[in-house]
Every structure is written in C-alpha cells, then in structure tokens.
Image (cartoon, rainbow, N blue to C red; front, side, top):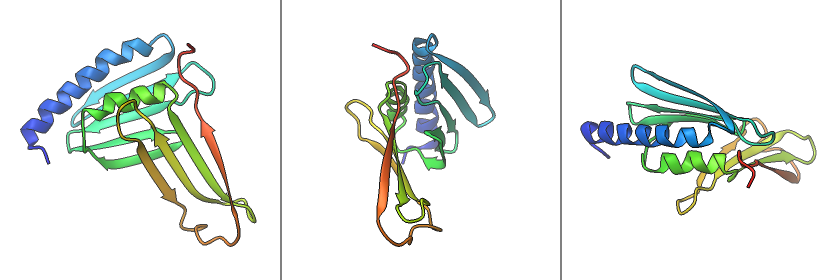
Length: 153
C-alpha cells in the first residue's frame, strides 16, 4: 500500500494524465469535470448512440467510484493509479461488455458481469450476484451488451 504522500503525488499525476486525455474525446463526447474537497470527478457522455457513458470519481481516501454500463461500483479500493487512464480509454474505445444472466423460467436477473478490456492491461471485471434470484430454479440465459466506440474509425 502506498504511503499517503506517495498516493497524493501519484493521484495528482493520474488526474493530470486524464486531463490531457479528455480533450482527445471532446469532439465525440460531452465532458463534465469537477473537483472538490477530497475528490476529482469526470462524467463523460458519448455522442455516438450505443457507446457507453461513464462517471469516474477518484477520492483522496485511496478509493474510487465508477458508474458504467448501467451499474455503479462505489468505494472500490485503488490498486493501481496508473491503470485508470487505460481503463477509461478502453470504455471510450468500446472495449466494454455487460453480461446479463437471467432465469429462463422467470426472466429475473440472476447475475450481471461488467468487463472492461484495456490494451496491455488486466481486464477490469466485476460480477454481481443478485441475492434475491441467485437460487432461481432451472436454466439461465445470458445476454451480452457490447458497446460501440465513441469514435468511428
């Protein structure tokens, strides 16, 4: 775990890197940036239909939050500040999938898996089990939502 001073320094460098990257997508997305006591936040809304909007918040407490693909992941521990520019760029590049696993019998959501695939970095993966329907009887059906890149190539 990083010391507080090292974390603050690397956090500032990460925010600077993201601030340099954001203008590269400004022609294909709306960008809202905010900084306040203890946090830095950016919300990005793509202009391309079918692309994935996101909101990212980096806290001074070595935690972050990410709202992406219709899901909100709050109070996540920061394990690698250097990964965030790659992670957010992967969303803008359309390298994000959200799998919905539903009960074939009832149609109730059993689980959701969000996967973001940065280049040359580990996959960011979060799987949420819906406790109310996790024990649903019978087969399950999985549908994958794949998002488009912000910029058409």
